[in-house]
Length: 434
Image (cartoon, rainbow, N blue to C red; front, side):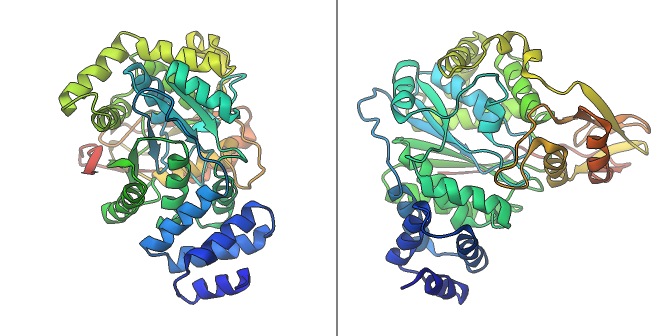
């Protein structure tokens, strides 16, 4: 069957078989299918969906498009963590060295920003010299010798997903459970891991807006992991407001380093601990969440995690001086405040608008080949539940010139909902699915 017939079949709501899915994925990975045809396939899947078997076949086909890593020679439990994408989510940068300092092996293949959400790779590349394009051999060596490594997808590892991931970002096909599940699981299983902890974001700044949607996605990914012989746990965490205070690449890197020094915002650190606990439990390093949290806390407070991060940065060519002097990260120093027009309490934050404003500012991508200015970003002064007075700063725009501010100010004017009633911040943990 031709690719055109495959697209029409899915467009009409019919089920694809394994060979049809494989033919599309492998052909696109090889460059035999142009982007405009791939975008039609993605839109058909986005609208019509896929069942569990189709999603499994899509995952397998994407893995088949490249190599998979064999980490069996490395001693220790190999585990990774993945987030479905949020605003201000720099958890992976903290967890990578923290869990490695606890004795686990962390091979992490991460992506760039997707839609209104940031990407771990873009944030790490704010460190001058930090290399995210590693050879497979160097990646495996680092995991073996220092316990952790992070790299962007390469042409050798799941190349089909690398191309489809970028295409989804610019064709309005991001928020699809089969596409999200297969994308995440293909590259995670290709890492050669034994286990995986998933951070499924829920809320206004997430791709999954409701707990029900998030549960469906979590169960789809757990099902794929189970059928491929991997231990997988999912934690549903809140994304109804940005995580931490910083939104942007260099400024989030700055906040992550502060967290490794023991000065992280409470909400950010709570999510770090929630996920870290599950990683230690899955690896059977700890028997209870309480014991896991004590181990994590010990490795953080003793600065073992910070030193492990220093080791990772040095191994991957980054300037380790940035850890001691975060001014070297190059965060834009121009600050333009967005102020409150009334007294009251913060009732809600349009987190999607915050992420979109950062993209519009230049801190994210609208097109596949767009350069990102990692110096730009936002810093939140107020979050849900906080009191605010008229004229007080709600957030600051980190910029280099006034024209940047003029582009995004309209997006930010209605970001905050302010009322007379004091509300509690949303609970960070929605549900654990294992």
